[in-house]
Image (cartoon, rainbow, N blue to C red; front, side, top):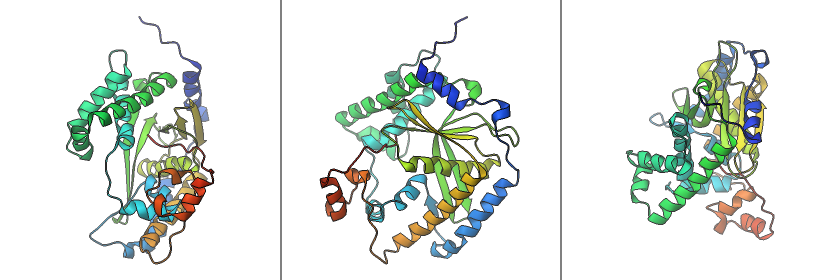
Length: 317
């Protein structure tokens, strides 16, 4: 019988951060899911008349993060037609490769996993498949290199994911309010499960770059949807920075979930108000000015960049 692989310090830290004995896991009242949904419904009810009865308002963590930041950038990105590119596609490819690595019977080789992921996703019928079938050789080479970098770092820093941990990548969550507002998203990685009212699941976001306060809000948004869906919230949230081999963990509490409800209500309200374009949008200069689609027509953003005040800001996959 093969002996278990020896773990490096980074992999040992992952186990220490994510593991918990039964006695350390919190319990949550079964009525919590109903209280959270009721507060969402009451807070979002005034917005229903603003939404076309024939339409749905889809709200993601990215949309909330954008509208809570710079309104000028939010509107500029609203007007941009979505197009697949290497920076957008690399996360999907990397996640697919990590998913394959969980069930791979041989020693996982990152480039093999990446190539297999590109091949599989190119067989689809969505926009990503179309882009993968028509992208240039240079774009494909860049995509392969950047996705490989993420997969290598993940396999270096994380211990092999055992099937008994119930690992799930790209886990979809959806919550409909008043049949008009849809909260939706995909969790990078979920591990564990709830046992009755005993929390056991951990939700993980994998990032490159450095810390941004929005990273905390992203996972709280997912925790809220999971709590309403299942009744028992996840016990812990963890942003993992691959470039640094570092965790940013946060335990889930009732207070955290109710504060997230308030943020979702405020964010949805602001989305509708800003999209009315009744006033001058606010501008919030920061590191994101570097890749803002409106930077060439934004004096505030150009001044921020020319002053050399930009600092590193972590990105997603």
